[in-house]
Length: 443
Ligand code: SAH
Ligand code: SF4
Ligand code: F3S
Image (cartoon, rainbow, N blue to C red; front, side, top):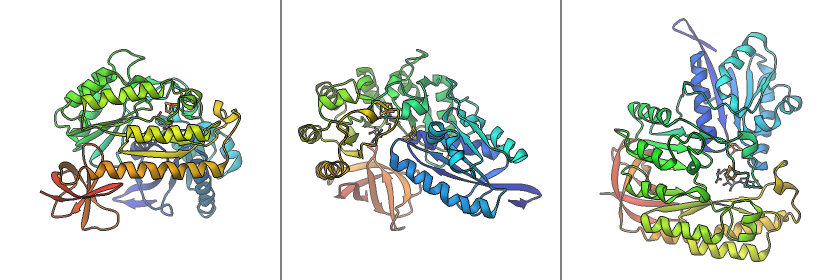
């Protein structure tokens, strides 16, 4: 706490795990905290309030949070007035069990309660008690929640909350509730405001953006893409995640025709054999997915396709796994996020027979990554000598004289810095394509 200009300044430290939706929620938490006098700090030691916005999609994500909770115990002992809260998916899943396990936590706020953060913090400031609020209602986040965006170029814009798909391995539907779509005019207004504040890129967020509007029926995802594409001043529109079962030809045509809609589709396949896809309740088949990819590539030849893959799902055999590798070699994704199946209690897969041994999972993960890396490199090598439009982001991690930006297809490009500013659009000729980055020269 600090007095500046006679005003009380408090500091909030936010630690955010998990997906972009969690990042977006955290921006709305920080927005609210600002209204009651908190500024964001990057130092835990300086903080008056520490918030962990948690993820529980895999056990490793939860372990990391428990580690942090332990670390914060010391800070609380030194400064009992410190307020410590847990929000997000693990808060939703564990509820007051978290406080039983770690009584130095002041509050646990569920995923549907993001907009109640200021109320809870003020209650604790006044009374120092414990608050747990994890009721999973059908209410969506009200549209007037202030947002303090973390980045200055690219804005996350949630278009829907929750998930109805119940893939058998996944905890998300249980901790995020049913699908609720925001109204198209509210989304467009948020995009317009972001552009007014200097953002050139937006990413539309949802667990399954292709089922946008199936509830209110005021606009479907293709309609929404078109509306956002037409917002004056917008330069790039991204969106994720696309569930293959709902990606319509209308959406493909919208991406093809949209001026600012980026040619990148994150289209998680999860697995490459019909037997496992069925057990996962993914609804599509290898054949229907293949046909979808064919239609996408026919309409948008420049498109980059990325995916999520899970190895070690219960019952996975060597034969399934070989089919998956063959499928990867056939589809040829630009890149893939690869995960080891993690048992989530309460989900159907957790109690399925024939759980795969850890050592086998690890072996398969390595084999999968090796195949994918080869493919990513081969695809990137084809870009040698090509000139691509890059949106400049800033210095690269390791070398301040080398800056990074992204292509429309979401590939990272490194180039020697020569006065460019974040947000500039420049043309870069690719001179050294690699597996995860493209190195090039400005033209
Ligand atoms: N809604 C998105 C992604 C949600 S979670 C989608 O359907 O694609 C992000 C990724 O985590 C998933 O795509 C999946 O690959 C992975 N994942 C989810 N549950 C998992 C589990 N129990 N074990 C391992 N990976 C999991
Ligand atoms: Fe999880 Fe499936 Fe929903 Fe994605 S679509 S969030 S993987 S249940
Ligand atoms: Fe994790 Fe929740 Fe996202 S479980 S992946 S933070 S929706």
